[in-house]
Length: 346
Image 1 (cartoon, rainbow, N blue to C red):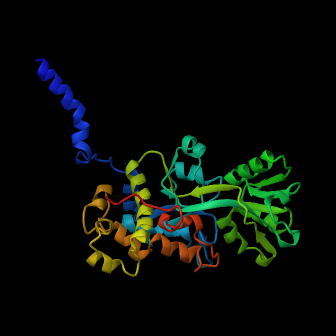
Image 2 (image 1 turned 90 degrees about the horizontal axis):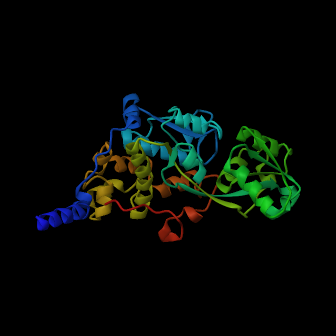
C-alpha cells in the first residue's frame, strides 16, 4: 500500500512533465472571430488621419503601416485583404470604441503602457513600430535641442502619452514650459502650424507624417533628439483569447516572413519548393497552425501574397519608398541591428 501510494504521488508529479505539448488545450470559441466571419468584414479602428500609418485619400482609400496590418488580419481571417471597414478613432474615443465592441481591434499609433494594460481592459498584441517622441519646430526659431524650448509653449493632444512625457521631461530638468492640450490632435497641429505654439510634440514617425500636411513643410524642422521610447502595436479587448491569439500571430507572421526571406513576389515558389520547416509551417504546407486558431491553414500565405511581409509594408508606407522616408532603425530585424523578431513557428 505504501508503494502504491508513492507511485501514485510520483505519477501525479510527473504527469505535467510527460504530457507537455501533447496535451493541447482547446481554446473557447471566439465571439469576435465569429462576428467577423458572420458580417464578412473586419472592423478596424485606425487613426483619424496620419500619413504613413493610417490615412484616407480624397477617394476614401486607406493606406499606411497600420492599415496594412488591418489588411493582413482580414487576409488571414477572411482570405481577402480588402474586407476591411476602417473606423477613424481619436485619442479619447479609441478606448471606449474598443471596449464597446464598435471595432474588433485598434490598429493605430497606440503606445503600449503599463497603466493602459492594467486599467483600461485592453491587451497589446505585439509591437509593429518602435517610436521615439520628439518635437517639431519652426525652422526660423533656430532650435537645435529640446532644452531650447524652455519658457516656450508646446501643443499636444490631450490624454496622449506625449502630453505626460513632455511634462515629465521638462519637470525633471527644472525647465519651465507651457503645455497647451487640445481634445483633437488635428486642432493641436493646426494651432502649432498657425504659430500659436512654439512647438508640437509627437513621435518621430507621426511628426514625419504630420509635416506633410503643413502649409509649408519646408519651414518646419523635426528635432533628432528623443525624450522617450514608445513601442506601438495592435490592441484588443480583455478576454476572447482565441481572437488575441490570431491578432498576435498575424503580426508575427509578417515579421517572420521577412526574416525567412518570403515576399509577395516569391511566396508561391517558396510554398512549392522550400525545405525550411519554419517556412513550410508558416505557409501551411506542414502542420495545421491555422486550424489551431480556427481559420484557414493558408492564413499566412494569404497575408504575404496579398499584403507582403513586414519589410515590404514598411518600405512602401513609411520607409524609403514613401514620402516619409524613415530609416528602419529600431524597426529593423534583430539580425540586422534592430529590435524586431518573431517567436518560432513550431
